[in-house]
Image (cartoon, rainbow, N blue to C red; front, side, top):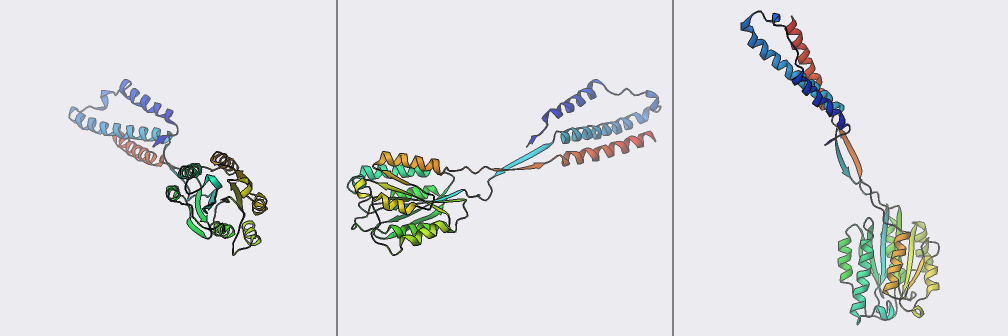
Length: 298
């Protein structure tokens, strides 16, 4: 609890100071009977109490006591993002081979850092090789996502990949989202090979549900068909990037962060004004005081 106008409480100090330093002088002629002095004194003490309560309640009410509660509204979603990652053995060429565990570990660390920077977004994960896995729907549980990434392994398969299927699944995860912005981030090292879903079909769905697609060609330039990836991102308001190594990938994620900033949810402040309580006490005390004062004059 706090006071909106705490300076008003100075008058409370002044009131009690005046009560002690400037007492009301009473003419003893009002008390001709000595036997009644004790009774009158007790009555005056009670009247003084009501008077103090009346003044105190009034001044506290004028100071406007307030309690404040902060809470985030049931998440006004700004952005949902799904990572689409090619886990086929050829992803990233020499930078993503199974036998190079250090590079693989560095890649995971880079992705986790990017996830950390998306603190206020819901994130999901789809991975694909020669077939597609929905690993995690969009969620605020980023720690779970990072834990899953820690266990990702590159598949040893042939060179065929199901990129279109993976994009279609990511679209399915995002299409019913209530977020203001929906984003899919594709990471692969080459063009699509096998799919059940034609490009025009998933591109139509991306456009229909206003999902931005960012494509990252990762690894050897000779392996990446950038023209093909450019065609995938076309008309989605997304962009195409190329990262030849981990360092370039980090810069790419930084660029995406600038293009799609993670917006903090500002808490809603709910104020409860409590001035009615001291004002009620003050009013009641004043009524009792006036009643007793009136009785004493009768």
